[in-house]
Image (cartoon, rainbow over all chains, first blue to last red; front, side):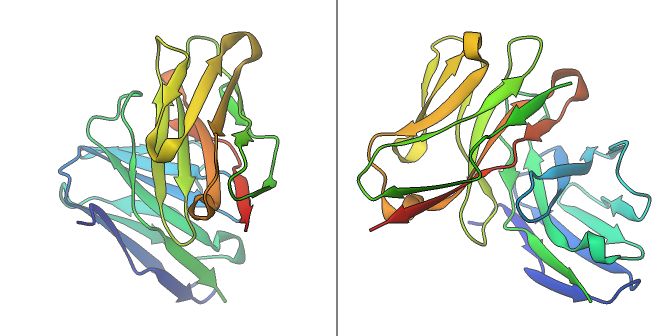
Length: 114
Length: 113
């Protein structure tokens, strides 16, 4: 019954070693979001896709990239992870991206950088 | 700019006691407001939302929230807390022109037996 699935649940990478986090959805929603959540902080939007249209937040570092090869899948690529990138990464979806809709979240991927 | 403030970082209540979590927002127009809950190791789940109309909204798991425009608040309440309510609670506002959901920093709820 899981609708937004994130893999892996825990990811450990080395400083500077590229890493990819994945998200899939069974809801056929148009919009997919990536949030970064550091300990004791609010989830922070990194970027989102409206269908194939990519929308980057102004303050998202260039180190973070995303791909959405089809409706169901979305990937977060961190090209050269730093210690400050250790965080929980949350994927979410919504049907149309309008303000009234609820977001459906995955369980997140906890990224550690050694 | 739109923002959300949750003044209480951590709250502890006894099981069976009532609960109120505070949320204040900053938004120029009528806001779209949300409360999400995050259980340990889980993603966020929507508890309730307010768009317009009745200022007291009911949500899942026995939660309710009241929108008070004069106080720019949207506090979450529950009359009797259960141990399973222990989680982190996030208030959020839809950012209008920014077209994104803006979260507060969360309130971590602990429930004592």
